[in-house]
Length: 193
Image (cartoon, rainbow, N blue to C red):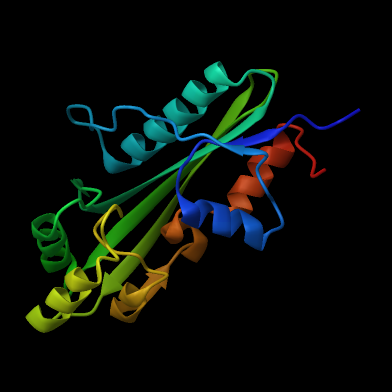
């Protein structure tokens, strides 16, 4: 008997890299295109969970009989959700807001089994950035590294030098909590080929 295929419902190369660290290689990668607009009065925690579950459900509907792994990362200051940065202006706004203060990175992971069962977890990490100078912000924006990233930064890159403290899961901040991911997959019956 063969184990059903594993499909990663994400186009994030960082999630693929994280899975490779624990010797998990998805059989397919299918980006889940969904509306990621927060609902009225939705907390950052609930937003991350809802999006991860919705991504898993969408890809599972398109790829029946497989394990689907999905995740979503939200960066928040209080109840304010920071965007996935697309422009330098957005990036500057995010970095100025994060400068010298604490924020949360909420990463939800959802797994759907081939039998339709699903499980999800939310991992909350708390980071504190040093006070950034205008020159540091400008140099970081010029690198282009924060484009497409929640909150406008990538901790695994140059922005790692901004982090004074991190409480929680480093892999979750990068984009996928590995401990929880393995537990969810195992709990739904997935075994490595």
